[in-house]
Image 1 (cartoon, rainbow, N blue to C red):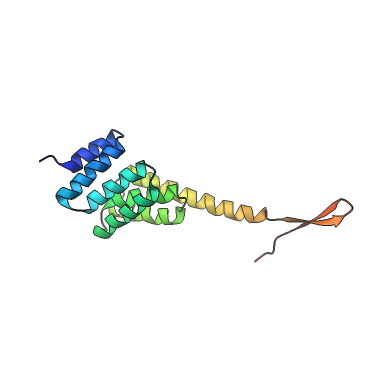
Image 2: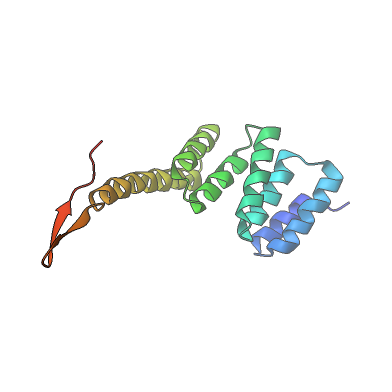
Length: 150
């Protein structure tokens, strides 16, 4: 019998994500919905741009095996794609800890998520400064009004 997980992983590496998805489903019929199979299905859907499906499948993979590092990492990638930098950082920290910091990819993803989170925080603070309003004063003049300060 052909190991469908191996086939699926090779198809993923070749960029054949739809075919990989089919192979992961065949693997599920052989082995059941293990964390590895669910993570593979989620990763294929991630590559196909199906972020919500991918997120649900990766969360299911983590529910099956909370120590399965690839699922944590790929969930972090999805959260980054969705702009959820704070949760992505938390997820990458979990992946990094499970991996004992051995993966350069996870380390890089964690660093990027922390930088994006910091930039997002800065942008939000900066945008608050831009919330000034103009009030018509008559005869062609306006009054610049600062937003209420918390």
